[in-house]
Length: 106
Image (cartoon, rainbow, N blue to C red):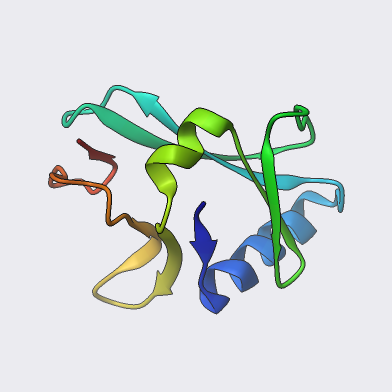
């Protein structure tokens, strides 16, 4: 399953605090689509299915459905905030090919 860097966990906690709902979890999913075959999807969710995988990273609840978990094994979610690069990025060792936007893979 995916792991979060300290920077990513801190930023997600900030975003959840801004939403004002401590029950929110970060859902990370892989969906068919994008220019390379699969695309990442991340959003806040309060719905957790019984077969979802759930893990806590520094107070951030991360939820992944079983089919996405297979494609995210060993992946890392990071957050950078700099002049050259800003935002979330996923480093996925399962991706054989990625597109230029970094949002899809195969």
